[in-house]
Length: 317
Image 1 (cartoon, rainbow, N blue to C red):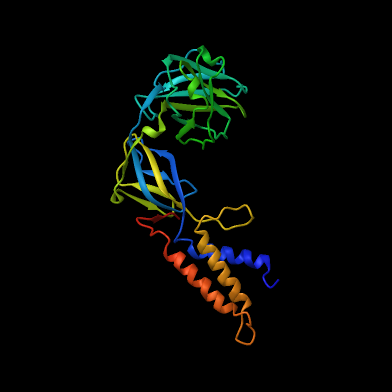
Image 2 (cartoon, one colour):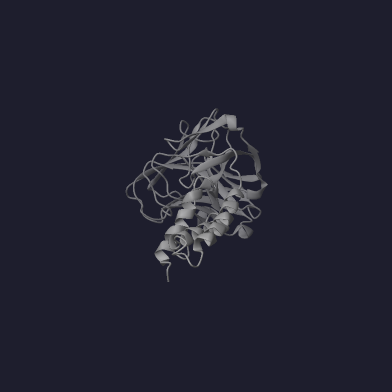
């Protein structure tokens, strides 16, 4: 009865705060991709520190459409399709789609391609940009084993896009075992349709576990903390970029919250703090709570010392 649950809750979070900056929740991201020109990249929000940058030097893949030619099969009248030779990510141009304000949900444009067996692949990767921001599921990328994406075999949700920003997208195939004869690719306005201009470039399927990764030397990159950007000393080539690092451990706010640091340390430190709060001097501590607190403090200190050393860490603002 001497320990208020809210007080114990505070001690638990106090223990987590104590090791914030010494312990991180591991994070990994494949959200960035080089193009041979860009040197600065926004670091994903979940990162509080970065300790490794890797470039995917090779991967087993199948080109679905380079988008260096305009799609011209089933193209809705609200789409005007051209090739942009000035703003692109690969080859000699990207596909530019001017979408009229009269567009409706469900309108699409497609192109037929040579038959592709994608049954051994697990992700589709591509570049996309839009002049007006869209939310996730506003746009779909379609793949089908019949012409004009008449009954899509794959309906791949395109995530939210920031206005006027090229975004590299990786979407898992839902039914790769059925994708044995893909002959058409399409782009559909699924929701919140409206006037927009969209660019597409380099649509391909990849075998995710076939990638060959090379770690960048630490001398070739640094973190701009104020801008939360990764800065390369030279522009990486046309490679997928993997970031490794960590996030600050979350404070617990419910019984279901997962503890992201060593549980032994949190339990021991919170127990020590609770016992210290209840103990007093020799005349007011008949249960020797302060001695027990010292015991739990030793356990907490040992657990803290056993946490892995953070090597090569660069913090993010």
